[in-house]
Length: 470
Image 1 (cartoon, helix red, strand yellow):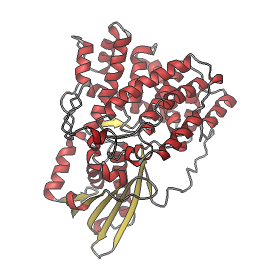
Image 2 (image 1 turned 45 degrees about the horizontal axis):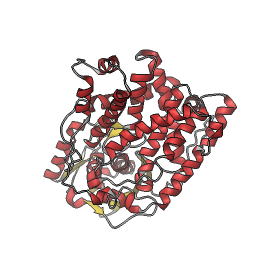
Image 3 (image 1 turned 90 degrees about the vertical axis):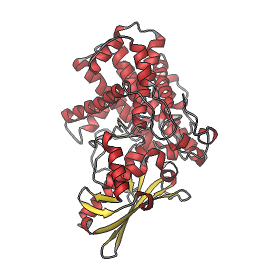
């Protein structure tokens, strides 16, 4: 559920980037990479309609160049893409030079959609001997990618101690073992790696999240893409922090905690945290899919809320353990949504992104706040129930309006859902988490294609592109 990558979109940027890397691996495995004479990339469906705004063409070029989204220096993206366009040369896998003109060799097929998933792309490599090889990939949301033909392949052969496909499964294991949700998830993670490796990986994810928040709260300017949206997180941070001085993240958090913590003050900070992440995301910054890039601000904002205003230990081992519990719980809820519905806005609208992230955050906050397993799942249900039917209608195909503000709303809804669940008795709940997931998927299938990340409906067609958001 949590992948480190580059904005602005997990399905339209990170996914195509990973697909390009997979295509390189095919060429490498067949020992034909050095035989490639030319290469074309075809983008279908939602990838075509909003690909420019989401940087799909940029991601494909970087992936084909052999760069990795986890480590590539984001401040070098513009220079590298400009060089490829100017020289019309692509260094395939960083070592094999081919002629490549992005304007001609990346085709946006706006009127075509492949049947399996709206986010489809095809690579066609022509070899020096005239033969060609092609592969079709689907970016299914959250940075997940499947190759055509493997979408119905058997799942992992790893035997999990507590297999979970539905919320009912999760509750079954919790009742049978007495374990908390995060403990069930941790036991399953041990099937792949040691406990120490899992904890280190989770804390690294948190490190990337907090660096993104901190960077976003201290970067001013206008977001790229042409909408002229002004970054607001830095201005809000300065207004809230006042004249306080600090030199790093920990000192910054301490200064945040030192001021009187009124309801409005905390509310403003939660919004600030979420704005910061998604302004970074919109600027091709490094973020964590949670579960997607477009919804990357909700979980970090709620987790920062917990760290700064709720957690008994602001630093040290106790805080780290709480962060690990939070992210383990959130990941399981996201996984259940992915298995039972979708986390792709191109398939389900924004309910699949902001709605799922809000549900993940609500359950996680409830878990670390001392709620029961049933209360955590109730919190997830409440959060999603009030995102049902949310459309994805990005203006100009950019992950900016209304996407950035929606992360603030998703974070606040998650906190409210957690509070409601903690003050409720889940045994009397009328709607189960599995029921709301099924409802979300039914709603997604009924939703008009115009409201599924195509920029063909909603705000995308009713707001002039020349108007800034603020």
